[in-house]
Length: 212
Length: 221
Image (cartoon, rainbow over all chains, first blue to last red; front, side):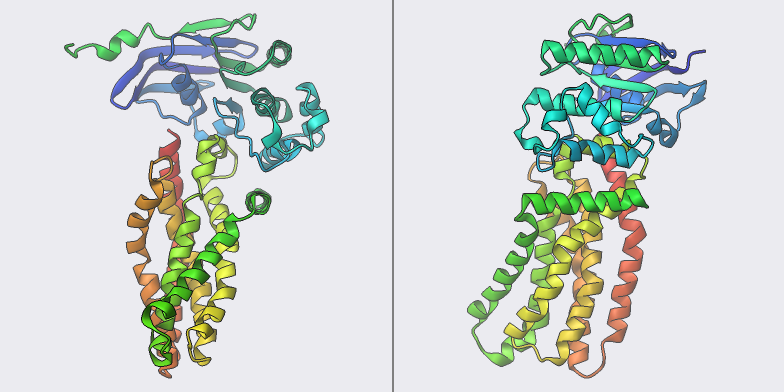
């Protein structure tokens, strides 16, 4: 029994089978890399893990109990393709909104999270002035500011420079060391000790039974 | 509860920083209502007879105008995903956004409405009840509209679709809002109509956020 498990998951989007019969298991301190071609269902699997998407079949289990969305929301971070950064707010206002909404975050956590991702100096700059990479770092700063055991990262390294990728890698390693879990969809090697889930093997099922 | 006000505060701050958006609905209301005397002629009698209807119809359209963006920006930048995962139930997120939307559009309309009504030669006895009916009616419009905004989020030409979906649902509020004023001007008080508007609001408060949240969950899937 693993802490977070998916069993025999079936994902259908727009009448197309994205993947079927997919199972995974993540234990504390473990990372899972989701790899596969574009459109193979990496993002769908992450959204499924986050509970944003309901599986068409199969179960998601936390400590062997089917997940209940309210409790599950509290223990995960989802960083998707979109950064959820409001251009009209400053960097620190953007981050503080999410920490206050979560409320489990310690007082000074925003300042600390910004410093980790090298955003302290531009904390009071309106987010509309940020580059794509800086916006990404701001989205990733939520991971540090609000503690949560499960990180779900969708292509986290997009738009990041080499140094920031290093920072992200260190952050993930520290998170794993303290017993956290991570599922990361990525095309680039992060150099993490991680299990792999290769998606796309299931793609054949998508067109099965449909004459060309 | 703090989280609820946190969202309202953020909406207001965003509107203030971005400017324009909030004032737009009121400006539309004033200009659209000012077109009527030009269209039907400046005859006192005629204008005062249609004043309540004109104010209500244009207010309704102004509210609709502001609703289009209610969830759209959050949907486009990924905020909606995170709000759906936040500890605050999505229903309360919707309610907070409706309240902020009303503060930004409905409340300014309350101030502009009596002025426009005077411009249209409405008898002064009708002004108080007009404002009262709008105080009860406009929050209902925001709430009902949130369902349409949630259903059309992510749709192309969402604004047109929103109007088609929501305008028929606005009819009861319009009818009782206008008749409250008419009854009062005819010397019959108009209290029953106000009570019915209150009932609409009481029903929309729990039901609309519930329906809109369900539609938003569908949208983030």
